[in-house]
Image (tube, rainbow, N blue to C red; front, side, top):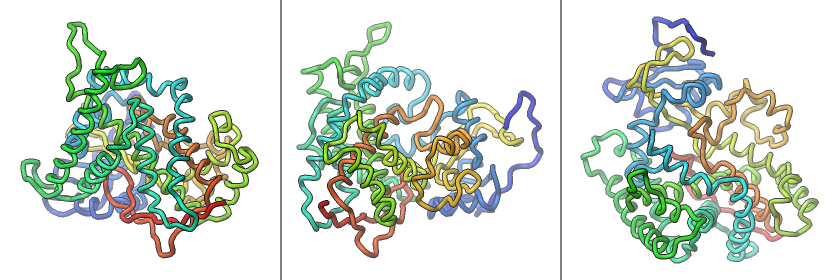
Length: 448
């Protein structure tokens, strides 16, 4: 939707009116899912609203989103707001670093996510899943999201860092949970960073607990390096002058990968289990496929090409409930999007939650219909009508890892158990960095 000489409009895009000083920020933070959906429905493909830090441009069309994330990505950074949210725990890891630091560290970490390496993780993923299922008893009610968080945390620790963190899984899991819950607090985002709010104190405690574990891992790898794991690679790295990464820089990358490497997959599986429990015909079709392809055997990498409906279930779940519901960028230089000039100092928001549910791209968009994901349907979609892992150079480094993990874990769980949602359980989401359930999702597990 851009050209070499785009026409620039004199006016600003339409958008909701706000309050003095705070603009629309409080309305957004109170219920971001409703706010962003209503804004898109009422004001179209590009809407403008206000935050205390400046204007916000909400992009609701795939072409506009592609312009920011892909075509003109060098003009957009994650920016100060993103750092305010993630920085207190992740520091300057690849999720929120920029420029040369981001390029250097992503290059160092990339081999861990090479397709050949990812294949090696497959048996590890099913091994940890089966071990987790051994703790389940027929007829027992489990806190499903909590179970998924524990399993995926163990997987990412072993796969990327070559360690078992059984003795620290509760510490790390609780600290990451505390951080995510504290980040929901409005005061954390609205009040000046010098004010020691309760949520900021909780985040500081979470950081201290994480640091105790992560610095121990770094020391263990320094004493016993390998040629495969991420920490050893970061310890080996030096620049042209021979300078190495500090322990704090390595710590930032490790915490980033721990957080991003287990949180989103655990959420995806939680949402998938909820959707299957409320759509029994889809669950039955999934189970039929697993029985036909696997015949009771543990799923392997080689089975995935035949588990087509399993992949469709994962895709549809991430469409309806993208684990990361939105992306934020800030322009470095002026840009023109949809005929409107976007200036530095503003914020650009792109919401998977909105675009994935747009009836222009998806028939009956609020329905859970895994079978919609045919080759023909995907070829007809605009490029960024579906972007659960973002796009462009900053596309999630672990996207293949996450998709492999989600499919193998889903297949392992559902060939062994039917999951029954406890009556009265609703899937209400909170406003954190990820789309997290406000309450646990209890499931009664029944052996097949």
